[in-house]
Length: 324
Image 1: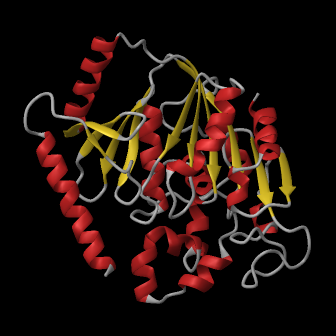
Image 2 (image 1 turned 135 degrees about the vertical axis):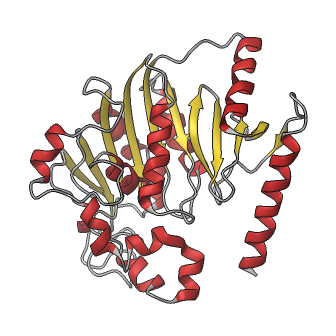
Image 3 (image 1 turned 180 degrees about the vertical axis):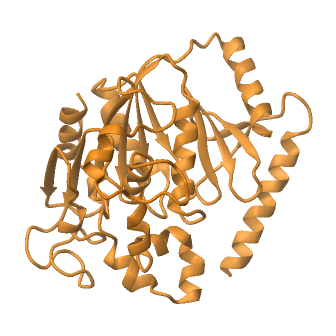
């Protein structure tokens, strides 16, 4: 059934992309915003360009997930430039924050946090990044994040990062070392973090990083629920393996982020936690102690479940306090 769903969805994507190649000004089409196959590679105000990781096509969406162009990246960028001229849109400037959702989720779960940051005027630009969490390994997600950063204009003076769950690990990989498949954490990661910078970023432009419920030492739940069952692994994708059964290998490419960062964890505040599968205290998905990471400016624990970290005002207050 899942195979049929995936094939049908992929055919739909190809049909839509082909339709958008007809004519210069296609009729806008409402989409679901993308999470299964699509990932963001460019933000410009309320507009964003997404890439389909199955067929390498691109599409231009507005803030309501309406598609205005499809085809190559260049074609989508050209359409966006025409829209900006026609609507008199000014170039982006000031500060920005990029927020990533967790595994098997989508950018819609970030809306409450984004609205809080907007209401409190913490940043001039707030971007909730979608990525196909079950379709690619962590390294490829991090490369997609690199594209988003690369496509921000130099008038963006500072870039902060917030990640929830797997989103934190993707940002951590991006901020740990070169996005090279063969790169491994050096013997002294704390020293290395002082010299490393992601491509295209300066010390002045690189802001700070907030991790929410990060599985910084792997995810026991992923190991026990996914295991090495081929059928279940088909549904969960490479990232599920990397957080679970393949964590020992994954961890070799995850160093200490090269910027200031804090960790905010959930849990029950006792020795049992919310899950009967995970040992010790946990937030229902990640072991509370397993969120800790050397080098953090602060580690804060709240009596919250994993998903509640994206809904709680007290958590948001701590994020604001740190980033400001």
